[in-house]
Length: 336
Length: 290
Image 1 (cartoon, chains in turn blue, brown):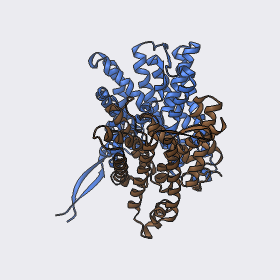
Image 2 (tube, helix red, strand yellow):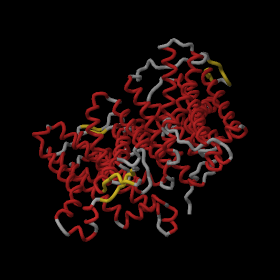
Image 3 (cartoon, helix red, strand yellow):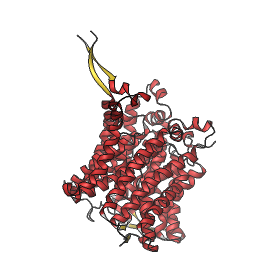
Image 4 (cartoon, chains in turn orange, yellow):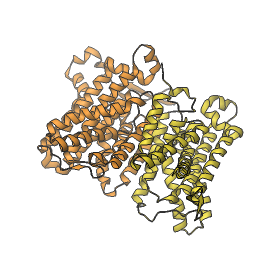
């Protein structure tokens, strides 16, 4: 008796295609559950301060920040631009925010939006000359930008030089610290997913798949790439701007390799291209890194190992696996 | 002043060429991504140091063993990591980049960050050339650097293995159909490139201390030289490193020394705006002019 594995859509999945999703509560719940669950979890977790403790609430905030960076990486990857230097966005947002607060004494409610937009604008301008490079070469050049910028700041001693700028204004209260990243993460997660499924996102995916075909359709791919970088830059620079005010200081560490490796690892672990994947990856990796905090640089070694194993052994990522399990079931069928 | 600029500019250029040559061999000429290059470079330095200081090897033996070990490491890296992602450029880059970062941060965690980590000179002493004092180590660098560049040119144009390296980059299927074993060739090119990295490390690192951040800079230098000169051409490496080396020295002498690093960024951006595939490069994939 020979067996083979057969994979079929679940009944409930077949029953909630299109308009039939409205036929009963079970179908609606089936569709809504994976979307509502993370929203509820993220909204409720900050309220459980007494149970979990303040330390883990800070970890939650840090994780949301890293997930935002991973989302911005993933948006750029959806256009075909693989960046090994996400720290550029983080650092640009961080330094512009710090500068505005340090020099002009603007309050965080002004500096964070201005830093976000300014950082995104600056990063896009910096990346404009290299937009015509394809995949690998773009990655190489983005790798060098944070290194060069941090060297530049170190040697020219502008914006505080090696000491950075400190004693910046703090954030008003703990609720702002926790809920602003959570809301930003939810907006970006669902916003990017919606964006990539609209017509605009279709053009972006087309650029990733075959840019010459899109060019021959009289679409200016450089303009679209620049827009995609700007949108991703808004998400990325926001993280830098927020962390500047959270830490109340900014220094050359804003361009650290950490902020480039972590979004990359989270995205590859979770599944490139699906925005939920990098979020899941960030939520796995960041608490893990908290456990490893005591061993210092070994943390980055663990990330590297995870990255190599994922790229080589599990290329599709966790999210695709979870989604498959949710929508389909497997059974052994007799073919003998 | 002028002779000093000429001679030290030459030294700087050859240092850049020597640093970039291993990377260009694997990535430019053979099309195999090796972003663990910086990691291998620093690994060679620390391995020589450990062999000399912990196992009390003589210097010559330590050099030979290190070059062999690092070459072997490159060879094994291909079979273990790159083989499974060959053909997907993004995954190759990420996997080897992660390997490089892992190696560098592993050394940082093991504590190799103090001032005692220096490599011995090949020969101490200074001589005067045209009134400019220059030490033997730098003369060795010039000699070995130029020698390696010449060797690379003749190797890739006139020997079977070297031609096979170029063949698998041009069109892998045709190379296979002509009897070139593409996996072995790619693994060999990775091994050669890593061995060249270790030669460069052994000759250049004595000029200072072995610092882990140099690993990241090495990758930056290799990429800058590659982009400016054209990734797949050996004359391109030489010309690009001469341009970048002299630009750096002139910037350091006549402007502020801090701006030397900015030369790389400016050169990369400039070349990408004018001629994206580099001065001597012919790969059309990089050019997207309509």
